[in-house]
Every structure is written in structure tokens, then in C-alpha cells.
Length: 202
Image 1: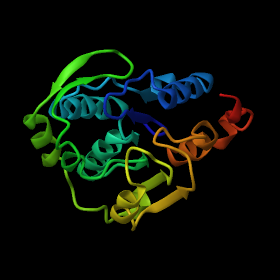
Image 2: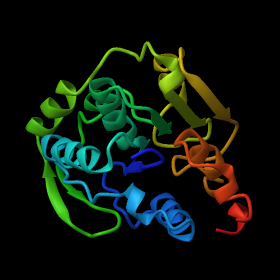
Image 3: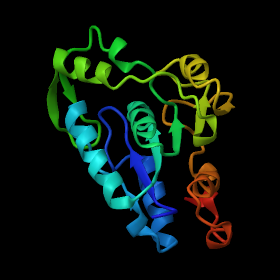
Image 4: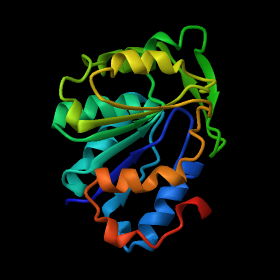
């Protein structure tokens, strides 16, 4: 289905996150809710990838929009399926960052608690792919003020891709709503559908 989007949330996040809600709202206003999926991902990478593969099957050839850890998942899936991906402050090699973070975790939105184990880390490592070679299929949105991830790691890894680097901001990506027209365009959704929407008011 052209013009479809699969939104992939980050670590300990959920469909209730601000970016996801803004995207859900816009697609609803455009009458395109059936072309968007925002799955509540399982905390285990193997389960999450299974969920995402099912969503890709249902949507056809969606644009993958991945935030943080979701950007890592999106990169793996884009390379596997030859899909386009838009990555927002994506994690690079996240399995290397979880040393010292094993143990009880809490989802920021659902209050679910779960155990981060070595098996999670191993599963993440299994998803690593070489840096993308087909830059046409990628957009990477970074903000230098990201307090969780060093944006320079993504800048280096995705250096062949279309990079949009904004000074300041934070890990949640400030001003996301105002960038939604660029995302919709990349997904193949015609500007005539959304030119009347004031995205800054979302």
C-alpha cells in the first residue's frame, strides 16, 4: 500500500508517546488511519521484530519511521526488505550501551516492569547490519542536544544517507510536528492532502 507508514517506538516507550500521538492524529485527520500502524512493541527484540514483520506484511511496503531503538529496528528491517526508512535520533549498536543496565526496567508509558537480560543484548546484536549503502532510501533526523544518544555516532554510521542535523533539541526530537510534512512526502502521500493543516498547532 503506497503512502503507508509503520511507526516504531523506542526503548521503554509506547504508542502513547508524543511523536506517535502526533502522527496518529495527522493520519486520522487525513482519513489515512488504515495506512498507519503503531504497534506496542514487546520488550524482547526477537518478539518485537516478529510484530514488525507482521505489520509490514499487512501494510505492504510502508515507510519505516523509527525513533531511538526503533531507528535501529527500522534500519535492520529496511535492509532486510528493501524499504524506505526515516530515522529520528536513532540508536547505533544499542547492544553496546546496555552494559551496566541489565536488570529491572520500567516502561515510561505503561508502567510495565520487565527484566533486561543478556539474552536481550544478544538478540539486539544479532540485528546489526552494515551501514546502509542505498542512501536514497533513508532520511536521518538528528538533534545535537540529544541527552541520551551521541548524535555523532548516527552521523558517522549514516554518513552516506540524507542527514538532517539540527542544533539543540533533545532525544525526544523537539519540533517533530512541524517536520511531519517532510515525513508524509517521503512516504509518498501527496501534499494536496495536508497543505491546509497547521502542523505547528499539533
